Image 1 (cartoon, rainbow, N blue to C red):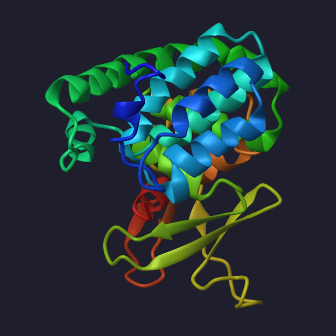
Image 2: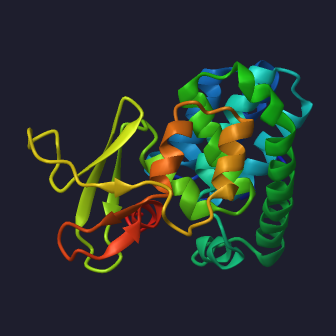
Length: 265
């Protein structure tokens, strides 16, 4: 892990704003204050700006996890774990991590130090996610859904985590037919997932498409378990629809609902 005082290395790391020389001071301030505004600036402005990861992302994550490990502020820690879950969605394999540094002028020792620390941090992240699950009872529903993202990343369900990031409001999902790629709109209407062939927001009074509940052979126990232990009441009613089947309104082929949602990512 590169130290915060190794500014000559931080300056070499890519960021949304050229180099990353501001990050060490932000990390230092965050460690001393646990201030949410500083955390938001660090994560959403510097290491995960507009959904992109950078070289500085890999260097920063170990420091953030170290702050969480030392903190006894449960609310802060839950929020930071959830934020890191979003950041880590795209960092799901070593080859991609290596690609991030392809055009960098770091020497091999510096690059290896960052990569090794990041890989070690992933294991710490998994441990912390599991450790703080009992504390998620204090979270509101939206925050629980974001924590679910972190949980799924921690069990290496990155693409599935992307679903709950993309559709984080839980008000609508998109089913894309695996056969013909036609879209079906799935709207959560009072905990009932209704299917429509056209966007209901601009096409009123259209007939609903039938979802046959719990008929698929798909195994969603990996999803049911965290929804249950985190107690995400806003997602529990939708599980029966995720496990259901729907006939594509374009090609008439039958597919599992959740597989179609996965195909939209």
